[in-house]
Every structure is written in C-alpha cells, then in structure tokens.
Length: 221
Image (cartoon, one colour):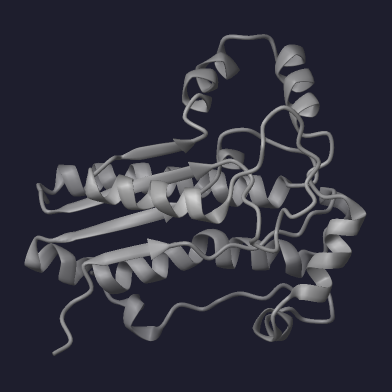
C-alpha cells in the first residue's frame, strides 16, 4: 500500500553556460524554474504530510557555486545561492514551529562529472567529482541528519576566507581554479545531448517561460 512520502530529494538542475549578456531571457527563466522554483512547489506539496506524521527528510542538492561566483555561470550561481538560502530558511522555520521529526540537508558539491552539465569544465588543482561519490555522500547526510555537506570536505574550511581575504585575492583564486566553466565545446556537446523533454521546455523565441505551480498550491499549507 502506498504511504506518504517521507524523503524528498530536490536534485533537478540545468545550466546555460554563457556570459550574462549572451544568455537569452528564456534560458535564465528556465534555470530558475528548474534549479530553485521547483523546490518551492515540491516542498509545498509534500511537507504538510511530513509534518502531520512527524517524519520526513528534505534534501536540497545545491552546489559550491551557491557560495562562490564563477564567470559564465551567473544565472546558475544565483539559482544555487537561492537553493542554499531556501534550505537554511526552511530548516529555521521548522525549528520555530517546533517540528522535530522533519529534517533538512543541504548538499554543496564541486563540479560533478557524467551529468551532461560540466563534462568539459576547465578545472585546475581540484578534480571534478563522480556522481557515485556524491550519491554516497548524500546517503550519509540523510542517515546522520547532517544539515550541510560540502564536497570536497576541505572546501568547508576555505569558505570563511571569502569574507576575510581581500577581493582581488579571491578573484585570482577563483579564476585560477576555474579558468573556464563552460568551454564552447561543452556547450555544443550539451546541446547535442539534451533530452527531448528539455528541448520541449525551451522556447525558440526570447519570451520568458515560467513553470506555474499547481492550483492546489494557491492555498495556505
């Protein structure tokens, strides 16, 4: 018999890979629709039942790009930063409301291979991650109710320096680690490998597209 959903993993993600001024409006809209707005609609759909049964876990797959900006990923970094804020604020809301049985975990990995998004990212010094090791880390975070998981782990120690070190040093470090987040060859490969569903989502003109939440979400939950 079907039971209520007790584990929600918001993992869907897309990337455009262009400089901001070269990114069509509908691709910016798509990035936010998939990378963050979808989190609102899925959580509003499943959280009430989790609270009612006092059991549940919501996992937000964000990115290190949610903490550190990267050229050619302005829309992507912004959407992942929003995902980080979403998880933190949601966790606080649950604590304020006294909900003890529903936990949240924020996963912030470095670039992941074999996702069709960052196959040819130009990354130096820090190796890209395999999807298997990220999946294992997600499972560990769920089992231990870990609020935040950063991959690789040592990045967690480096993040505070972002607010302590002068910006020119931060800029040099980021550009040194990621000389090019979206090479032209990567964008061509990505366009060839996009699924039919994604192609149908994207309009051929420049008009913004928006994922409209289901009517049931118009009520308070």
